[in-house]
Length: 108
Image (cartoon, rainbow, N blue to C red; front, side, top):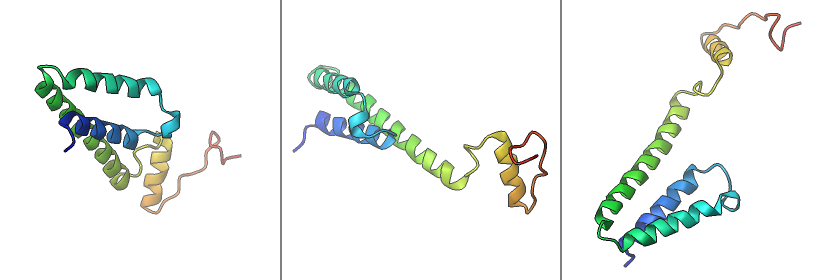
């Protein structure tokens, strides 16, 4: 059976990997080493129950944030647009086109 602190460590690493935008080789090695040291130190201490609870909360938070971002992108595709792009997309949604202005990149 896997020790509880090892299982927690793996769940944190898994969530960090899912949240990361860079590949595993490009991630900072110091962060991984700090995580390992933190888990090694706290797995043996008297406060390990509190530590486990805190790590569970962290993993739940990271998982929830990832799910929230996924749902936001799925149901609100305009969320990461600039205000001008947002207005144009909203106009297209109701069947209108925005007029071309002099400051626009399309205008002339």
